[in-house]
Length: 206
Image 1: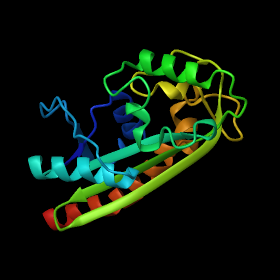
Image 2 (image 1 turned 90 degrees about the vertical axis):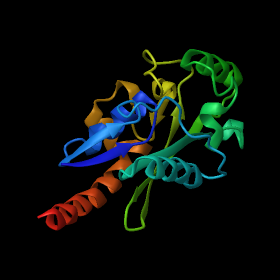
Image 3 (image 1 turned 60 degrees about the horizontal axis):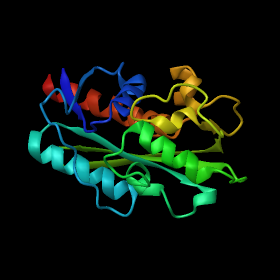
Image 4 (image 1 turned 90 degrees about the horizontal axis):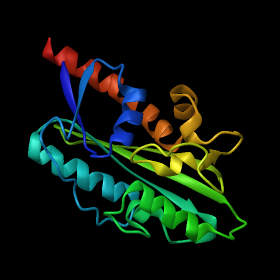
């Protein structure tokens, strides 16, 4: 069975990605499975640049086909402040989820415009110079306080209510969330690509 590396150290993201692609005929391994403890420094100015930095690094290190992604939140009231810097913004890159959330909620106090958009860019890198990009975005609003216990690694999921919905990401079922979320949309597009990639690989192997 083909092994494909999911190149993120964020367990929340790994879970969400596997919810979409986990039923494909491949073994999806993680950085932890291979003993990597540190992720790659992200210096790009776009989600795509950051995603390829991670994918290229771990492809060179391991030789496995690699899935990587970069995602972020863009908040209307905080124009230009988050985006590709979302996880490193505010309380700092080493901040815990709780510290990040505390800083974010304080910064949003008194802001009447709660509109925001989540973006995700996923990439796939493999031998044969395969370099593919898949994107997703979801508009919504931010609750004034967490609507549930924030999931590990993706705390804003407890605040973000997608457009047309009444629940935050974190209280939706995996199926409901992945149908409307930024990461779910990107991974659904990636899944379609991987179905063809894996089919071709299996034919070559035969």
